[in-house]
Image 1 (cartoon, rainbow, N blue to C red):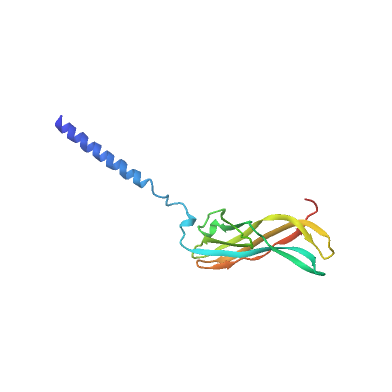
Image 2 (cartoon, rainbow, N blue to C red):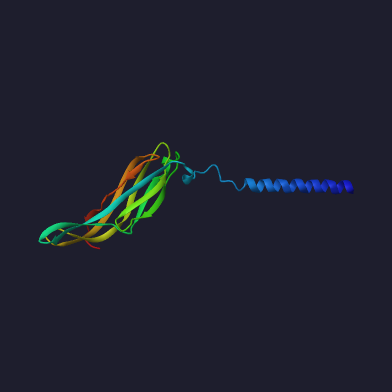
Amino acid sequence: TTKYRIMMKRFFTIAVLMFSALSFVSCNKEQTRLQIDDIPGRAEITGTLVINYGKALVGGKLVDRILPVANTEVLVKLNNSSFMSGAYGTTDYRTMTNAEGEYSVKIPVPDSGVAVTVTVADILGTYMDGSSEEVRGVFSFYRSVPGVKPGNIKIVSGEFEFEEEDEF
């Protein structure tokens, strides 16, 4: 029986050690999946966004009413196939513009580079043409930026485009 107890203690000790080793192994990240944020290269997408609301009469002169797009979400999309052949979909990074319409976001970038798109949700509004008539429509912003590489600072600034709507 003493021999049996010693053998059981050894068996129990070995079982505990094996269970402990397996629990550490199972805590590791799955190595077969792409983790985009693990890519060491980084680039910065930055810019200033404005809307031209059309003409306004100021001091007897017609002037453009160009205002910053303040406190608005900017969406930067990365095509997943740029990171791994055969991958589909996009990875999205979001940031907000400040009171001056400025934004900035850092994104992971592979050495081969990546194409990104910068978009903002459409804004319903009115545009004043030169005849002092208000035109209702949609202001939109969409830019495609090819070839963003690690260490790049890409400036994606601009004015929203206006499209007249028949009805809201």
